Image (cartoon, rainbow, N blue to C red; front, side):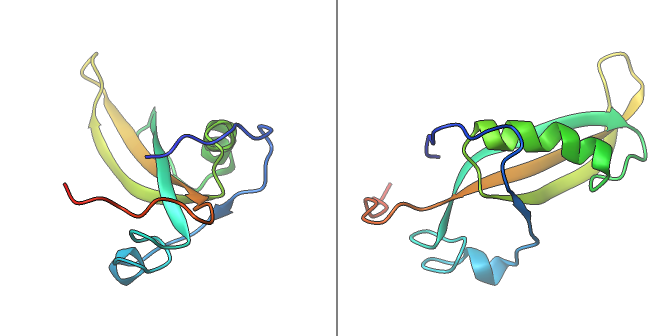
Length: 109
């Protein structure tokens, strides 16, 4: 993941749905594509919370902007137990930023 300069907490973000095709190498969200993943945001909310609600967006936006994000995608949402044993909605978003021109090519592992 890359580190980006922070943006104002009310920065413009796109909330999009992406497919596995868009994550293939050289595709829009894949290795070498237009965007690169710069972080993830995890929210623990009341069970049954809509991950697209204005309340949750109000929590996600400033965090994604602080990461320097341009795009946010919902990675997953499900019910789990918190440390007190109560059910809660666990919501995870992926934060993406526009890949800078001339960025280094990915290296083999």
